[in-house]
Length: 141
Image (cartoon, rainbow, N blue to C red; front, top):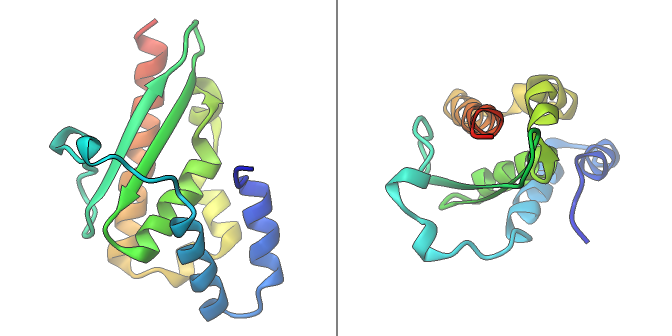
């Protein structure tokens, strides 16, 4: 069973403090499938992240393809943030990805207030990469 952004939002609401929420974010990262070493390439590395972050993109068929992402990071909390973004975006049509308000969703979770500026910038870099790849999905067809 994969984690959805709705289940993450509901779980966040049940947690009382940010220490518990940080632990939960780390657990989300630990639950990510293993990321192949062969995918840890410069082209898959997300620029703008202080930690190392890799994202891969797979495109489905058709004029509005389903786009599937996989990712990993060398930092526990960032790996959890990758898991949240994958729950938000992966397996959705390119048009849905482009229409998704990531900042609004992350604000609902309170992440915008509780991340360091460097992690916030890295999170924005990951979102930008995902949106750019979704944009390419529509152009490649």
